[in-house]
Length: 232
Image 1 (spheres, helix red, strand yellow):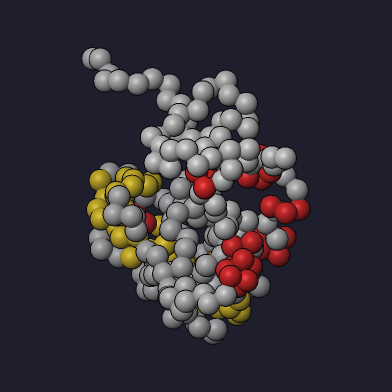
Image 2 (spheres, rainbow, N blue to C red):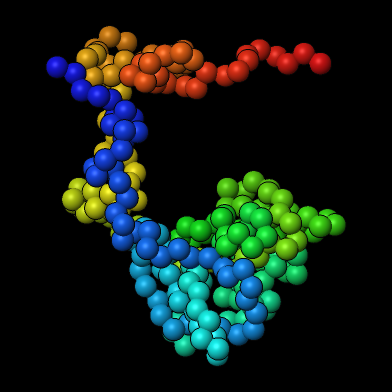
């Protein structure tokens, strides 16, 4: 008897495919209104993130949590509007060539881009109210001058350099983020378990699912709205 294919099982919801609650308890980002000097009071390893989480506090007791910069330590002081590694500033105020991470998509949204261990983006140049930033993928992305970012490179680089020797360890790493693992190739399944399964045709061409296909058949590439060369 065939089983539901993996995307049906995951899409239905349930305890098996949920992210562990502990992984999302910490929500790193910036406060909507923050200024002055903050001190690092705590560093923690979050199971849902590849970067250590730093807890900051100022003299008046205001607290927020953000991703840690490389080589950050407890007791270190950072400035909002500064230009040293670990400081938080608007990207419009930074010089060309400076490395940044946890960049806001829109002003005061807390940070959306470049939030993984060891990554950093580079400030390229400013044109009017737009700052061009080279992302870790080498693509250029444009941001508003008022978007904030953390100066430096995100900590956590080399976290996965040491080989994972046991499948059990990999299982728990991936489970905390609710990612699909292990992933079985569709063509290696039986025909009853997946539309691509069976021993026939191990090198099939790319398949585009029909737009009105049922969930159990809707596998492969997304159907484009149109094909062919666009006429001017």
